[in-house]
Length: 210
Image (cartoon, rainbow, N blue to C red; front, side, top):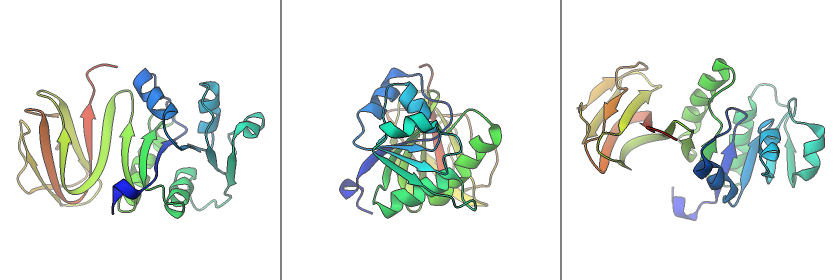
């Protein structure tokens, strides 16, 4: 996938909206702002008008719809609003996403969002931003910008995922990582580190402060 040729967009899920001003500015400066259903309310409340809102609209204020350029009403109850939105992004060639609002509110939605994004990681390149972490789904070999002492956690949703790391305090060498807490709270040893995996993982880079 040639990511440089893809359209870039911010996708906001109806979870915990960021407090960090840099993250809010990142949303505002995006060329395309896509709201997952009720996230449109939160964006409008924060003075940001999404370009597109997608979902079944069981949680969006009717008064807010008038301010949004494109409303995509999807009633398919076999998929979540996030799945519907990611399908729309693929259909419209938005394959490079900055994702916000994944965490917060009900815990089942929080965990479900990670499973969904993991399922779509083969088709969509994304980075997830929260007030606490930057989370990157990846597969194969990926080099990350970092700093000495940064907390790094690696989570696999796949069974017996072989993971190798370089420049982490506790190195992994073709380690068979299944869904577990076995590779969390590691430490970066410098300005970069590398993760290589046989299947999809999510790499968490933990922020020390807002």
